Amino acid sequence: MSEQYFKNLNYSMSNEDSEFEYALLPENSGHVLSICGSGSRVVPLLAKKPKKLTLVDYSSEQLAITQLRIAAIKQLDYNQYLQFLGYQDGMKTNSRYQIFMDLDLPENSRAYLTKFFEQHEWSAPLYLGNYEKALIKMSKIIRFTLGKHIQKLQKIKNQNEFLHYLETDFPLKRWKLLVFILGNSTFLNAILYKGNHPNKNIEQS
Image 1 (spheres, rainbow, N blue to C red):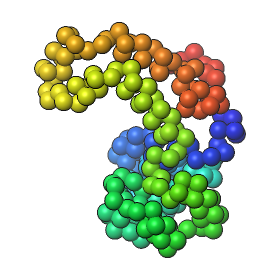
Image 2: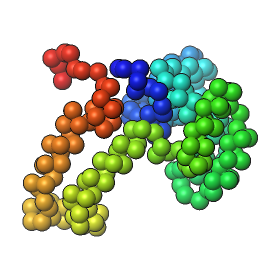
Image 3: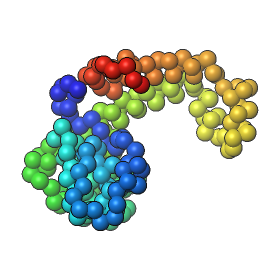
Image 4: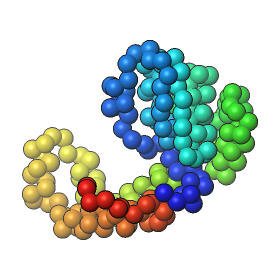
């Protein structure tokens, strides 16, 4: 993958599903090596209490956001942690600033994260990665295209209701068009990776 893609924070929440890694890792392991990403795959591994956890990533920005997560886990209570990152509402920007200043972080990560938070006026970082911003754009496209049907889908209470709605009222042609456009590899490469995702060069899926 091109180095250009790694110049900024790309993942602030989204990452691989960590359920498989968590299930695979034995309790109280010795030395565990994990790809860093947004840190969301690392946090569950801590619950298995490895003696040593080494995190690697091509991007120093991803290492910084993960160090932020881990420092917050160590120093904040549960509700503070959720509000600081943005899983829950309720934290004012000046409170997030004060908490950040008290977190124990490496100086290089603190320098980057300070600029990052200042750029976003000390908002919660959960949806501020490039990948998350792209997904929000895609969500707006879907909502615009499906219109009132989004609200109708959210009110469905069971599977029978859902199947009946699909057969009688759901705009299936519009949905298929959305899947064709948004699920296209060229489109995904453009909106998620700014054209920097490597070309597929093997025959397998």
